[in-house]
Length: 138
Image 1 (cartoon, rainbow, N blue to C red):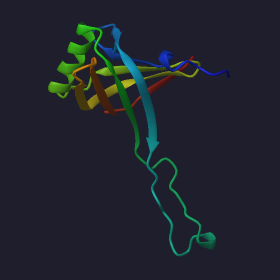
Image 2 (image 1 turned 120 degrees about the vertical axis):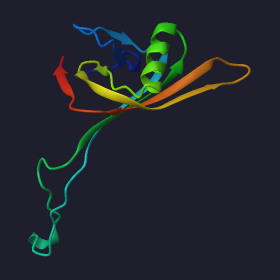
Image 3 (image 1 turned 45 degrees about the vertical axis):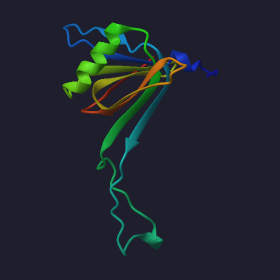
């Protein structure tokens, strides 16, 4: 696999329709997707040579997403704001080039607005998975 452009990693929010349409969250300059799996430790004093033992499949899986950028699309910005203020859990698509698409419900855990007097208005957001996610390889 060759190196990929960071701008090709896309974050899209669903419209709740049937079939569901997805709109890119425009203006993002940076994005990070973090997949987590908590472990369940089953180590006891009888564990072989004191090695930690984990229970397979017993942990909690989660996905966190962060993004930061500038305002360029009023419609997408409004959709994100509404999802935050209603604490909704719309479907999102996370497109990772040459890897796949992660899709599922996420809640906006944080939404931050910033701006300097001599610069553009910017925002950042953090998403927390709110249910099972589907991965589709590309």
